[in-house]
Image (tube, rainbow, N blue to C red; front, side):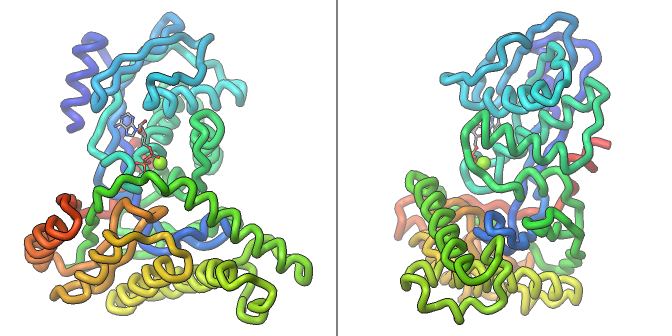
Length: 382
Ligand code: ADP
Ligand code: MG
């Protein structure tokens, strides 16, 4: 894939020196829907990549070629504005604009971007594009931002320029993941550390539901609002910033509606599960880790209500397949991917049995991505 992008670059922009930035996707192992409530998350970088080949120009032209969309877009450094007709270009322009806002001069650039991260499957292809451009900008201008500054900049590009209100986990993990590790991020303090992933004969397998995510952003916004409301209610009695500051939510039960209580309970319990999950990794106890994955899914389904029939089907199916330790939805839910922890030798059976059943019930074929924990963009491009 990398070679294809590099070849497309020279076809578009001619031979001569250029650089190529490699940026992975991410998958969250556990800690779902709690980043925006100051919780812990535990993502890994995965071996699906965005490649950006580029060189600086002497003039002020910004020339962008998308390999996957087979589209060319051109502007100049004086006109970095939102482009209605080229959605993909906004993820690039947004990052350049953020550097400009910080006072950096944006040079003319020509680049080709492309890769094999499935779009809209919850593996954060958008953040991979942003981080890739962040790394590229630093390389071609000799700028060096602290990791956290770059991560926040890339997130602002998505929040403000593109207009999508994502949390910080995506850019964080895509930049700072390390191979053979999971990245534990405290979303309240933004402190982080690595937990070992010594997986032996186990693998993570992603099953892409291929479900359209039409409702997902309104559901997402609704959940963010309802847990904020829960925080507001608790603050009448206790000074907290987030629900994850609460040890035992049950004492507040009669203050909430039944639904708000369930939402809040998910946040508090899911946060505790992440801490337990890290303990499991430190002890290479993948049986217990898998059990926590199932518990996380149940909570997302029943308490937080962000699953869907397709995801529940895959999780239930997995319980009857030999070699499976755990499964859960990963990402915002309502579609996207199911993450399965499974013995490597059992993957072919899992795929062969699930694919026709799923096809029968849902009329579409899921996609399967066996994944590997890889280095984030910082370490890929040293
Ligand atoms: P995801 O869950 O994959 O992040 P989003 O809807 O947040 O889904 O972001 C997908 C958008 O990111 C695409 O519509 C496109 O604009 C941009 N994008 C993703 N991958 C690429 C790519 N390979 N080339 C160009 N743009 C991309
Ligand atoms: Mg995204």
